[in-house]
Length: 364
Image (cartoon, rainbow, N blue to C red):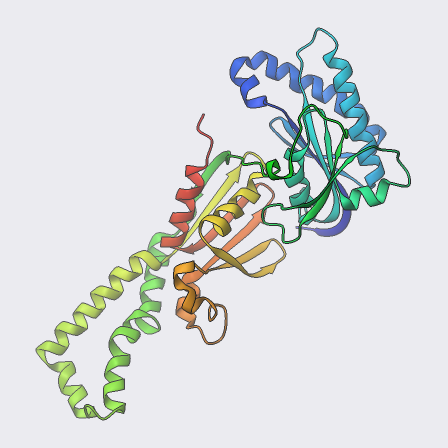
């Protein structure tokens, strides 16, 4: 798959209250989508906008110029307001625009430019536009706009705080900074279990037998007794062939068998209806499950589990001093491909993540 990295102005749009409109009248909702297409299509062509993805009522659009993006957004809102003065089905949209680095993976687009644009779009007022400081700096000498500046806005999963600008400056919706965090439900097309259960369980059992719980719980204590002089090697052999030793050996095998039932690798593929829900998956992992980023390569991110109750060990996690077997147990790998995410890790953590994701899913 060809990969291209570039700077782009990314626009997210969303119809206000579309779910309610759809529930009330499907005919009205479909008509509004058709009207939206009729307004957007000529304006995107005029301003060299590239429609990357439709997400129900929302659109993901790329522009090579921040000026083109903002000019297009202003005309879109103006045309929708003109349409709403007619006897047609009234609707309103929000628009968010950010200028940033993006990664093109075939027909999909990823990166901070997309993530931040999706975060600020809900912060726009109905009929309004929300842009970041990067967009404002790029257009301020070329376009005359009167925007409301809001500093130090905290966007979930974005390390830095952002300054945003809201258009128009005066809005009937008197938003305060503390109202800028918008909670969204997760809307899922499908969750597919890709796990080869038998293969992964056998691998987990072998690993725990050779490197994990079996040597840690059984072999290592026996070796320590010999090295500390509490018993000799002949005592060790005699113990192994004794009834007590055989029983302990069998018990440790059963413990390893049982532990492997919870530590074999599970893999799920989740397809979201809305690419913006991908960031909500990260909400679940980082905010709800206390995962921290371990490494990132292209569209693959590895997370390590650092719950607060394990504060004594958290500083060691991810370092060479932390046992490899425990690191693998704590690791979660997430691979992004547009609005599809593949998540893999040990059964206990992955199943817990899937359960939390389902709990936030919209039920229709």
